[in-house]
Image (tube, rainbow, N blue to C red; front, side, top):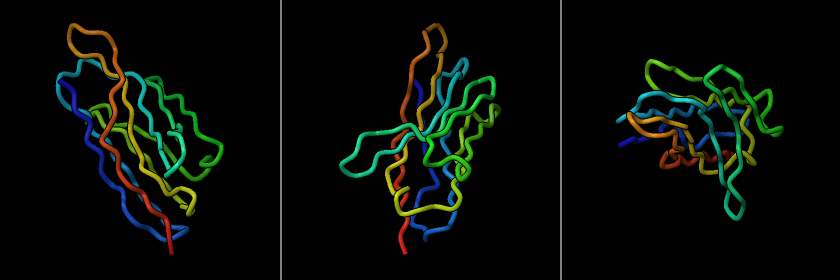
Length: 120
């Protein structure tokens, strides 16, 4: 079994920063892509940032230059550093990790979600 545990959300003022973490544990043979999504009330879930095992990144246009995705392959953890936060960044943030367990194919797993609220 695989578990993803997120942390780091909270309430921050506009212009502030937060760092989200998502740690994978359990029956993990290898990890491929890792990413962060978000879902605001009444909106569809959208990709915020993605990171391949080779180090390639992609970002939503709305967060380019403000957010940075990174990973620690030893800790099986993906991070999202969010700077210059805006009210429109308010959403529940979910990590998504592509994991191959022993003897199985790659599957995508979701974190439980962490609330990020940006308000004065």
